[in-house]
Length: 160
Image 1 (tube, rainbow, N blue to C red):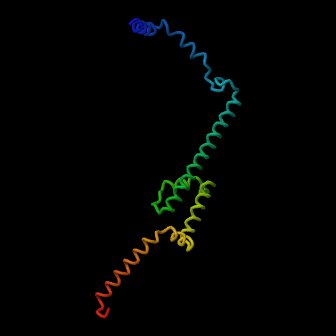
Image 2: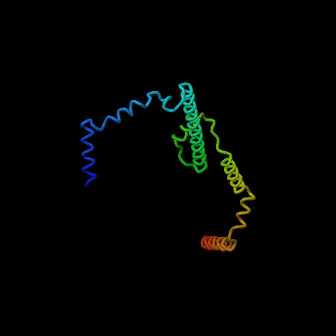
Image 3: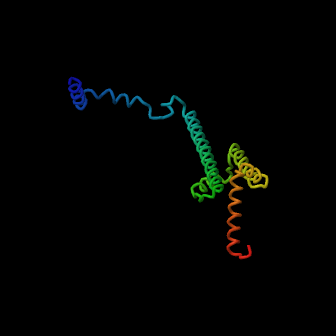
């Protein structure tokens, strides 16, 4: 309660002008020149501002490059899995200057995937898949198909 009364009274006194004089002198003592506020000469301050702008531009360029690389990766995955294309990704790649490639690590992964797919598509890959198949199930299916064909042929042909 005492705090509430004190804050209300102090606000009223400040409004009357009795306690507000100290704040005005603080504002007047701060320099209006940003170089003086930073403790630098005008030339040093301008050089500092140039460096800040250059660093920001470099960061923005690196960020745009990373975004374009990610977009390139997404485009590659969309092509690989035959998904619809995205205009946003193509725009990001164009904004980066069309000189965007996949990062080296991803290029290695893509190359490995392509080698694996080529191996699976080759005759040797198919032969390796045959080894992994269940031969008993294949024999049973072949025998069932053969007996079905034999029965169909017996029904159609009176000689057999």
